[in-house]
Image 1 (cartoon, rainbow, N blue to C red):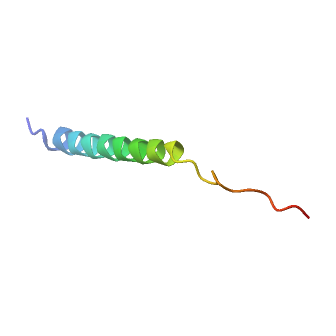
Image 2: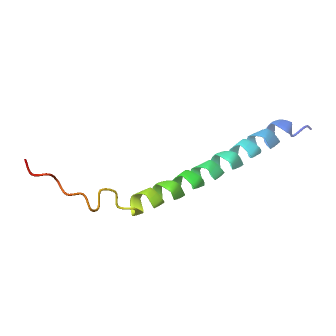
Image 3: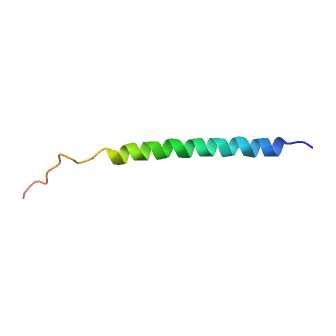
Length: 44
């Protein structure tokens, strides 16, 4: 029996998981940074 389809699905799954882990790390870094931390609203 040829396992080509199973191999292709496995590789796609590994790539998908790797991309998910990378984006989670980036979003965690982005959340930990405090954007607008020193921003003060201008008084009109």
